[in-house]
Image (cartoon, rainbow, N blue to C red; front, side):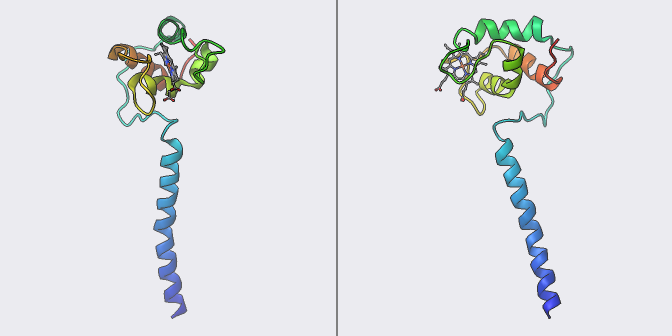
Length: 125
Ligand code: HEC
């Protein structure tokens, strides 16, 4: 009798535990990780120095230079790569306010380059 109760109790705990773990994982990753269930289409390796940095400098650094009040400094490889998911999320208006602030969004081809750069491992190239 006791054995039966034990077995069904454990049987009930397992799915609840898994459910809790999965939902914790989903909540903790919701803002930080880019979802690549559909990998971006990246025919070429994207260069940080030739493509990403000049794009951020001309579209973002004006407001996101050092000492700005926005919470994000976007001026070099270190700070752009550490905020890469926020940069992409904000350019897509997904999980973050749409940037450049006030819109319109940058062209898809530009956003795609950022997605590819992240997908390729945020190279400092
Ligand atoms: C015209 C000024 C301006 C430009 C240009 C601009 N931003 Fe912003 N950005 C802001 C301000 C101001 C905030 C803070 C808004 C707030 O806290 O309500 C902000 C916030 C953000 C945030 C945080 C948003 C959130 O929801 O937490 C990210 C990420 C960001 N900007 C990235 C970028 C990127 C990437 C670019 C270039 C593609 C860019 N910004 C261009 C002014 C600008």
